[in-house]
Amino acid sequence: MHTKTIAQLAQGLKNKDFSSVELTQHYLNRINASDLNAFITITDESAMTQAKIADGKIAKGETSILTGIPYAHKDIFCTNGVKTSAGSKMLDNFIAPYDSTVSHQLNQADMVMLGKTNMDEFAMGSSTENSYYGATLNPWNTHKVPGGSSGGSATAVAGRLTPFATGTDTGGSIRQPASLCGITGIKPTYGRVSRYGMIAYASSLDQAGPMTQTAEDAALTLNVMAGFDDKDSTSAQRDVEDYTANLNDPIKGITIGIPKEFFSDGLNDGVASQIMAAVKEFEAMGATVKEISLPNSAYAIPTYYIVAPCECSSNLSRMDGVRFGHRCDNPKDLEDLYVRSRTEGFGGEVKRRIMVGAYALSAGYYDAYYLKAQKIRHLISDDFKKSFTEVDVIMGPVSPTTAWDLGAIKDPVAMYLADIYTLSANLAGLPAMSIPAGLSQKMPVGLQLIGNYWSESKLLNVAHQFQQQTDHHTKTP
Image 1: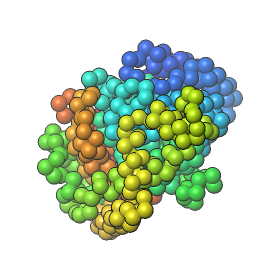
Image 2 (image 1 turned 180 degrees about the vertical axis):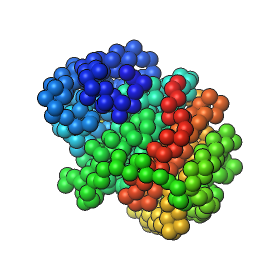
Image 3 (image 1 turned 120 degrees about the vertical axis):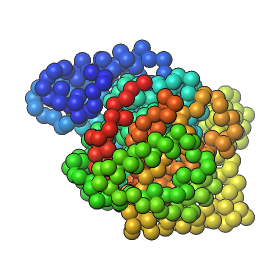
């Protein structure tokens, strides 16, 4: 059963080939036998309860297409009554008292939560090595990283421990692990999916999305995740279209833009070869390919690593040892409580980004750093707007390399370079996705698709048509 897509599983449940209880138990057995460290919390008991309820609704014909389908939830989404840690010691004892909007919507669709997946602490990282709960392993090669910060979700889908997992993407944290683990992942337009109850890293960049085997499955799950939420001030008041409606539209005649800046000296030759082979496949399907320029994309890394740390230093100030989360023992006064609780509760990368952000926002430096970064962010967005007057979709690599060895990158700045091709879409707020495009040295390579605002349906259509012509997405570790 674990080799089937969501669409196939939904049909199997409808035909009563198996029950949700049987399906859920099958996945739970696989999770409990796994040594990939993809999960922080496994919710065996509540999952079986949800599966029984789903089977009852299926028997009565009171179902949606996702009724009874299991999923894994990135441990950054608040889930009522379940530990929500964000991969941090700071929240190791935090039991969420409410559901995030995404959790609520998945519950309303009668899906079955298998557990909460591992992640870089507070979503800060590109390898899932920054988790308080230890590194997650890449199922293609357990000596390599799965990417991050949604590495636990990517590993869970790639390792067939779940047919679907949620992820969040602040600078590439859905697309990059999807690429490194050989699955499909989409970051919607900023504001398309509610951030309410999603523990904030950088509020102007964070966006949730699905991680699945196929573009069709991503469309099915995004239908449920997307929508306006009055609890989220950044949520967009736009109707949710049916993302499955146009999956089978022909793509003949679309224009694909290839940014010349994405094919620089830093791109691995094997990765570049697979990306260009994928582009040629689109040409064979009737697409036109055109070289474009995104001149300000070179500034994406310094811009992101000012904007995001500034916002995280503000957001994480609520983690003070007073109201919830880790609290140091026997503080001698309030300052000691703050200092020791944060020192003990936060990991090294989180402390580094808080300090960078606090410095950049301090008196005398705000204009020089944060304000200037926001101006460059506007220029990056303008580059995309200009390009989309000429092309329908932009394509290129997701990551400059395939998955690297655990512990191989020790320099934080070198780690930041892993996101060089993904950051721009977050800074501009654009939808973007990664789809499997083949293997290089036996490790997955992801093709990145970037669309204009609110063009998730077009991206999913283009991705689905590619997957109808290729079998990269069917490959398993």
